[in-house]
Structures are given as C-alpha cells and as structure tokens.
Length: 465
Ligand code: GLU
Image 1: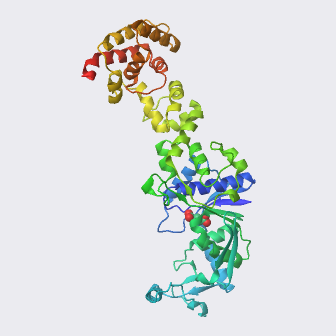
Image 2: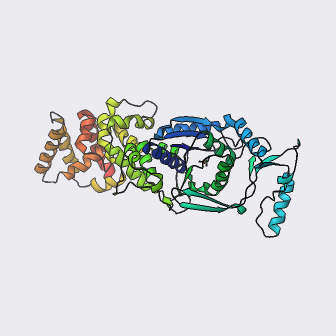
Image 3: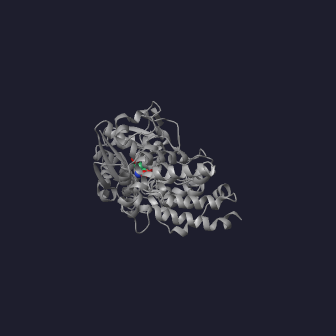
C-alpha cells in the first residue's frame, strides 16, 4: 500500500490540505503502507519555490511525516513528454493544431447557440506531424467511466460529456491530468485520497490509467471543509493556513488532533487522542461524505486541553517563539508555565500572562473593572497596610504560611479573606483573574510582592476617586 500527499505550491499549506495530508498519513500508518510527498509544481505561472519550502516546513511542524520525497514534478518534465508521446504513438492521443483564436471562436459560437462548449475533436483525424505549435490531447473513448470511491461508493461518469482534454501544452509542459497520472503509476500509488474538488477530474485520470495499461488506484474524495458560516472555508471567517494557527499559538499536536476530527471520528465520543492512537483506528473508508465544519472555538478549546496536559518541558520549545528576542530559559520559566498552562488557550495567551513576572513593579496596569469591583471602602488602606506588614513578617514566605497569615489577619479584621485576596491579586498582577495568588506571590518573591502591594496602597486614593 502506498499513499501520497501532492500539494501544489501556490500558497501556504491550507488547513484542508493539511487534513488531506493527515488522512493519507494515518491510512498508510494503519496498514503499514508507505507515504510519499510530491510537490506538484508544473504550473510555472503559479508555483513558487518558497511556497514549496513553506509547505514542507508546515508539514514537519504539524508532524506529518513521509517516507519518500519530496519529489518535485518539475524535475520530471521529460518523463511526462515521453509518456504523452507514447499515447500518441499508440493512437490514444493526438496532436492538436487548433489555435487559441479558433478555439475561442468555437467557444463563442457554442455559447451564442446556448450550448456548453466542448472541443470538437477535429484534429483527431489530422495526419502527419508538422512543426506548427500544437498541444497533445487525449482521445476520450466513448462509454461509461466507473470507479469505486472509498467514501462515496460506486461512481459513474458519462464519457460522452468529457472532451478531448489536453495532456501536453504547446510549451511542452504537462497538464495536471497527465503529470498526476504518470506519477501515480511510476510511484506505484495504490490509494489516492484528495479533496473532493478533484472528483470531476478523476474520470479523466481513470481513462489515463487504463490507456497506460496500469491498475487504477483506489480513490477517496474527502468532503469539503466549511467555515462557521457553512460556506467553503475561506479568509472571510478566519485563518485558513496551518501557518496562521502556528502564529496564533496553537500547538501542532492539537491542530493535528482537531483536523483529524474534520470528517472522521474514532467513535465512543473520543475527542482527544494521540497521533499513534489515530493511526491505530483510522480508515479512509470511515470518512463521512458530508462536509465538515471548522469551528475555531473548538480548536481553541482543544488547544487549551493540550496545554493543560503537557509538561513545561513539552510546552517550552513551542513557547519560545512567543517570548520575544531574549527568551528566558526553561529553568526560569518552569514553575510559571505550570501555574499558567491551565489558564491559557494558546501559547500566545500563555506568553502574555507570563509577562506579569517580568515587568517592572511600577509598570503594572490595573484592570479598570477589577478596580471598580474591589477597590472601595474607607478602611481599605489601613487593612492593606496591615496585610503588607503581616506578609513582611511571614517567614518562610511560602504558599501555606503566607495564606495562613492572610486568613488570620482577615479574621482579626472581621472581614472575609476575599476582601484581602482580591486587592492583593490586583496589586501583584494588575488583573482580576490569575493563578492562586499565593503561588504568584511566591514566584515574585517577598520583596517584589511587597513593593507591588505598597504601590497599590499609594495609588488607592487616585484609583477610588
Ligand atoms: N496538486 C493537487 C492539488 O494541490 C492535488 C492533486 C492530487 O492529489 O491528485 O490540488
């Protein structure tokens, strides 16, 4: 068994392409097959080397591995020409000398007669070879074209409706139909899984496999991915490339898991699973026919679940990119990552939350809503000053001792502990929510915690006015 992912390097790796790659990989892994990466870069107008590099980098990041390749179709142009000539020699393809103007005129005539234009095939019967510019067209044989689709079942197309499509352009470059079929044969591909926007191309490929005397592979046309607006996923409703999700701070394991669930499910309500687990369960035949909906909120949720389950050692390599020019070491960050990882949905959020430990004590900005809610009462200044003194004499300055001291103080003041905890949180972090505040205080250390508390006390009258 051998599968392939065959992107055209005309842009970033789209999440739809990423899912296609993943499904090919999982099916190959499930059945001990081989996975090939092929860069379909014969469209010189639209293909770019940097897109190819970017796609390869995105696949690596995502954890899509391949056993062979990347093979570039642009390295194989002679092979496509050779195969096209073989078909001409055996009478299954022919040279077509019709000019663009002639074809345009035919098309215009058909349109004004209200008919859909198809090439008439008139060059089929032109004998001899001339040096005039020409293309090579496939002579489509009459009859039904049938093939099995692992997802959609039995497919039938009427050969009459397919015109004699071009295999080789006048500049000697192959069309997609030719290069994809020649390669799938030469590379012994047994299963072709690709987006169902290719469904209408497949009968042409089936004809070509037969014309070359090759076995027709199994096909699996993957359903579309829709955006939240139930239209084809596009920029309108959010990010569409794997790269954008990487930049948002999605970890690759989460994106992989999420994409795996677009059109497939392992059953038993399983949602979070590893690549290896998916590779034990996956089968292209179990993919849904119906389009899948891409829900960005669910991806954020899932990413949060991954962060929660990952260790600081696992998170850190992904987090580094979000830590600015001079990132701190894992050693310095381990405790902080542990404290915050269950409170962030993305690496970017995590990195932002962590900045509170590294900014100057007097650079803290107080969240206006939290100020409004918790900075009130004439006696607040006195109570916070006592808190300051209590914490100053807390020894050792650890979570249990500091918390016990605060609670005791609150009791003696006749207020709930919350009346001290909320202002303390505001003082230390500037925010209304944070990890348990004594954990934060211990990471900051006694001195900085006290300095931040003093600063809040000094600003009280300003804040409550
Ligand atoms: N290169 C084609 C694309 O990017 C895919 C071809 C195929 O999988 O057969 O749409």
